[in-house]
Figure 1 (cartoon, rainbow over the protein chains, first blue to last red):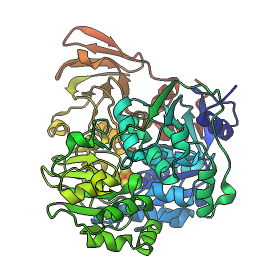
Figure 2: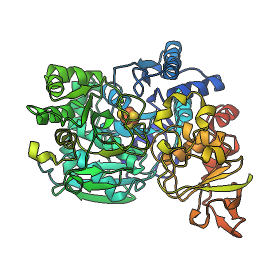
Figure 3: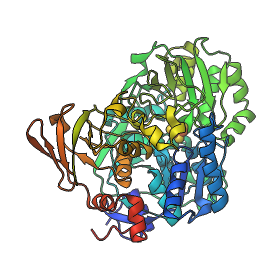
Figure 4: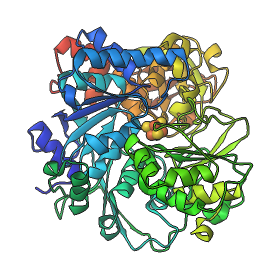
Length: 417
Length: 168
Ligand code: SF4
C-alpha cells in the first residue's frame, strides 16, 4: 500500500508496516528540551533512576527561553541542565547560541529522522522532511534515556498550494491565513503535509516558518518533502551527505485535502487573543502599536532580517513604538553583522536582543505594560503570552512588522517596498 | 475511578498561558507554589476556591499552546479530579494522562458553574447531580487507559521496564 510522509518515516523507525491509527514504539534520532521544560525532564529521570542519554550526541538541552537568566530561580533551573549535560555527555546549547528550533535545523536534524522535543514548536524540523513533534517533559525524558517513544501514527491532511505570492505578501501571510481558515483546532492530532508548486518554490527559511506554525492549527507535525532545496540547505550547513529524498507516495491516503491559491492573498494579521482570529492588514491598519518584535523561531532568520533592514533603511521607527530585533541564532546574528543589517537596524532605532526567545513567552526582554499592544513575528498571541494578561498581541510577517514600526500603528508593508 | 465534586466552568480556547503563564516561568521548578496560580489568567480566584475532587469544565480546544507539562501537573496538584471539555489540544491531552490527570471529552454545554458532578472515569460517565442528567463521555483510547491505570507514564515505565502498550 502507498504511504504518506508520516507513515513512511514512522514505519522505518518502528520496523513495522505502519499506517494512520497504528500505535507504534519508534526509535528516535534526536531529542530536545529547553530551559522551561528540561529541568522537569531531568527531575523525572532522577525519579526513575535513569539519569542518562541513549544518544548524548543527539540530545540537545537549550538555554534559550530565559537567556541570560533574569532571576535566580531560573539560574538554578539552568544549573540543572548544565549538570545533566556534564554528567551524560548531552549537548548544552548555552546563552546566545539561539532558539532551540532554529538550532536543531541548523546543526542537528536530517531528512527521514524522528525528533521529539519538549517544546510545542518542535514541528519546525518537519520542513527538512523529518518527523518532528512536541511532547511534555516526561515523554521526552523517557525518550532521552531509552532512545524510544510511543506514537499513534497520525492521519494526514494534504495542503496543496498553488499560485505566486504578490509583492509584499509572504509565506507567513499564507500560514496565518490558512490557520484562520481551518481554525486553531482545525488539524488537531493530524499531520499537515505541505506540497504543490508554490511549496516546491519556497526557500528553506519559509518552509521552517510554515512547519513551525503547524501546531497552531493543532497539528502533530508539519511535513515537507525533502528535495533539491533541502539538499542545498544541508550542503550549506556542511551536512550534504545526510541528504536523502523523501516524499509521499503519489496515491497515499489523506484524510482531507485542502487547496489554496496564494495569488490573491493579502498581508494577514492574527488579532488578539487567538492565532485563528485573522484579518487582512487593511482591516486592522491604524491600530496603535507600542512594541514591535522581529525574531523568534518563526521569523528570526537572516532572510527575515534582510526584509526588515531594507524597509527601514533611511527611515526610523515611530518615536512611540519600541522596536526589538532578536536574531534566532548566533549564526544568524553574525551573518546579519557581516551584511551590515544590524547597523542599519540600530540606526533605525531598533534594540538588538541576543539570540534566544526574547519577549515571545513573557519571561524577559520586552514584557508588555497594561493595555499595551505588540505586533510580533512570532507564532502565537494568547492572552498573557508576553508576560501580561492585560497586553494585546498581533502576529504578522517581518514586512508588516517593519511597516508597523515605521508608522507606530499596524501598516501595509507595500508602501515601503 | 469515581470522583465527586463541583464544576468550575471555563470557555473555549483555554491556553497553557492561561493555566501556567510565562510570567511565572521561574516557578516551574517549584510546582506547589506554581499551583497556587493555576488558571489565574482565566479566573484569578480559581486557585483559592477549588476543593479536592472539583472539576474543571471547559469548551473547545482546552490546553492549546505550549508543551509545558507543568499545566496539567498543577491542575492535578490543585486537587482537580478531572478536566471535562468538548475537545482538548493534543499535547495537553497526552501530558495530562502522563501525569495521571483524568481528561474526558463530553458535551459540557449541559454543565453550569457550581453544578454537582459525579464522574466515573473508567466508564466514561458524567452524572450531573444538580440537573439530574447523565452525560456520556467519549471513551479514552486503550493506551491512555493503560497509562492512567498504571498511575502515569513514569510509573508505567517503571512497572514494565519499558513501554508495554501491546497488552491492550
Ligand atoms: S521563540 Fe517563542 S515560540 Fe519559539 S521556542 Fe521560543 S518561546 Fe517558544
